[in-house]
Length: 151
Length: 389
Image 1 (cartoon, chains in turn brown, cyan):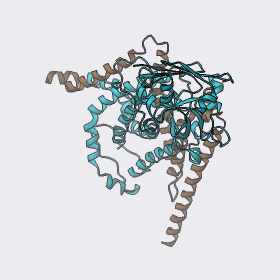
Image 2: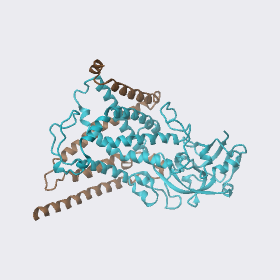
Image 3: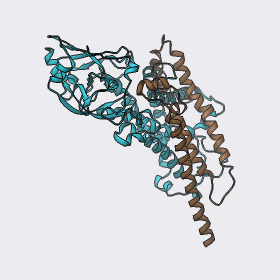
Image 4: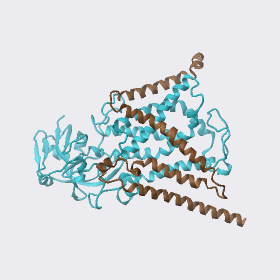
């Protein structure tokens, strides 16, 4: 037992759990064998992880790193930029097809509607989030400077 | 915290997703051949009428709401991805393989699900096949991850009091003590956000997405609140047929003519003209149309009870009914169970909200059965075959 743990790096139950997981996943994948779409599915499966880990996350981290270097102010600016920016990014990623008008033909066939309004609506939403954040910032600024002047 | 939310939410997503396949009907679940990867088969009930509206609305709504939580969870552990050396023991190599399945399947399910509810099939494979099999890969990896990490999550939750964190402002926010997980930065930058702020940010992201999606299941002016989703909009003029269409008549390629007849087969085959159907006893019911994309709408349908049609066809206690549409294509035929045919509110609807069905809503006649997925509520019905046991 001790020898197994030393060699494997964990208890035997760990091996059983991981092996069961890989076996079930392989069984699920086996239904795609012979399917002409197999390669596409695998590409999307691996691609989703790669795009997230090596594109989306580094991009967000870089932008966020830049935000923390914003000029110092009596009321820190960073979260008033960060929050609406994250809101814009999140809604863009989730509602991407409508905003960039991808899949127009299937959208029309399914709903009888085109994808024309989404981009304008999203821009409006982004502007609204930015405006609310700026408004809150101005209020905080006013409160801070007044209490500084008063104190 | 995020792990705890996902521990509750993900199993709900899995179960509601598996139920969707059952709801499509015996032998009609998609994808077709899945071996052992399914719930034990049972007849999907026709009561309560909102059952599928609930299960599928929860599946899609919760799936959308969990997107920010998944991202927050992944970003909180991302230093692990770049750990060096990448493999220290066979156990770690194996565990990293299961984590690749976990992260890959989670993001794959989110991506295919979000694309499907917006009718964007850019991925180029069957949504049903990909999303269903991907869900089983996720289930496997999720179970292994919970088994291996439940203790870690519980220790982390116990390590600090939620109430105290919620009372801690930015000025009093200090880094975590270094622990054995390797996730604590050795030389952290000064905090720009409190822990309660980070929780509020993620929760706020979920709340924003819910606010932009819940309109999918609401009728009236509230539907328009789903600003960026196809089902926040309706076609038409605000009249009786102005509720969301699932597949237009033009897309289905149907154009019913005055010669349309409904053909019933059974012990005593019959055909009916539109006028003859309208002269039969009519029944009115308020029933939802609920679709796999999570949207739903409740309308007032009027038509002939399916059980009355079964009796007219000489099969008053049918084992099943086979419905065929004027259109061709994958959803042009469906088989209803005995319980669905005999439900007192199950209709061959001729009218909606007091008006004739529009062509896009299935003129001259469509099936409306309580709790049946919308795609199985066949439009432009051509024939119904009532089958004996």
